[in-house]
Length: 574
Ligand code: NDP
Image (cartoon, rainbow, N blue to C red; front, top):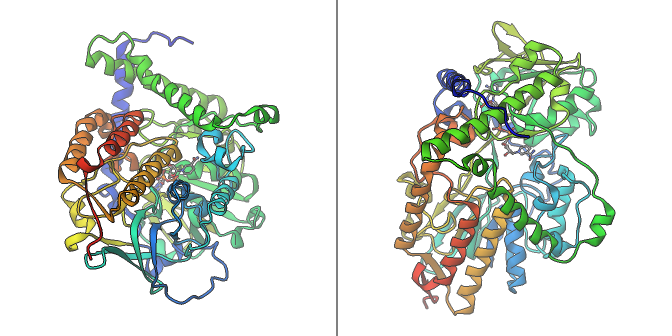
């Protein structure tokens, strides 16, 4: 449908309102990520405890040597391992904090957990596993099972070590191996280490005055306590439940709470944009006709479609960069106003509907898709507590306090998200010459492709900064896994032992990242959130590579075509 023609002042006034709402929020908060805490120790230690690890067996410390060691057992490790196995690598160990593989899908077992990327694109290695997802969108348990199926198929359980957190990863110049220490007293050695600890792995809590004093039960969304709620939330029917946060996790949880709990209070600081999410069971006739290689072809097609995106369509016929940007922004605002109209159509109470309207550009925050979230607010047991950008800043023994009112709760759920893309969470990474990776990054992140960083031989980083961001994360991780497996294969096939990126190759990529960061200016104008470092100024190189996913993929290939130019490669010293 063509967009209605509106005068420019209509768009300018909405942009003014976006700015106002952003400034309001920045004014309320401590700067950047300081408003959060992810150091979950002392009184807060209970929020980090793994509720899914039952009867963890004790074991002796491990001191052996493997070829490849993954820190983390989520999709990064699984996808790379699959490719390494295909290339004949035998000695692969996953070291994982949880009690199974799965990463995000191990931890996020909250009711309603599902993925917003179409399952046929998101679930990886479907050809290899000869599996077709059950629905158009996969639910959490199916994705978790798929992770386990990958680990079984590629024999990754054999050497895996669970319930174990890596605390130090140090390159030893003498034996030219990584020495990996853990909280279980292990000192494992590995030729190659792959940081596969995920992009949103460490839960964070909003640091709220009095939070330790809360007398009811509480947990973070990624540590769902089914002992308390019951498997089907049946224990909540006489409970008053509160949830802090309205991001993608809360949007999926609230409708489930709404169906069961006696009362639900949703404490909102900034609303999410919620679009339609139509789901359906996979058509068995379609599934039967799928030919080998179907997923790869499908992903290619989706990628091509994305390139012909909203942005490009808006830019059609643009005469100057300013005109192009204006058209882009106007199309974005039209989309957001459609999101507003949808809220008015669904939510009965006009003031609740108004409070649920997001005032920022599309993609300033992670967009959400759900058909039941907005209708939940029409139920008599569900109450929106809109803090109008301020957030909950005080919790009493009874519950959150806002605007002089205390909300007495039995259960308080923190849907406050995760620390973003830190390489080496819980873990000190020390490279050749004793340099700590965090100290190197303190001067600005420096990598080649977000994967290699000079002075850290035989170390590969997955899902970190300076890589391309993809809404379908598994596709991006698969390209990184393919690249890493090819690099390791090259080292082995050519009689080398060590691979370390050259300074000039690293510098080339840093400049590439900086050059394309210009395209993200809009995110500086966005309402604060983890996409824009909570509104903090950021060094230009400390972010994602924004040159496009296809280009990122092509650069990986080009780097591999000139291995000897881009890397120091050497045999093992005697
Ligand atoms: P987010 O970081 O997206 O959301 C945190 C929420 O907590 C925000 O709404 C934030 O408000 C709010 N908040 C923080 N402090 C306070 C406070 N003091 N008072 C009130 N509210 C507060 O975390 P999520 O766990 O929701 O999502 C993390 C990411 O995980 C997603 O963005 C997505 O990438 C992924 N995910 C994907 C899913 C999917 O595929 N469907 C499902 C779930 C997660 P404010 O916005 O103002 O900062």
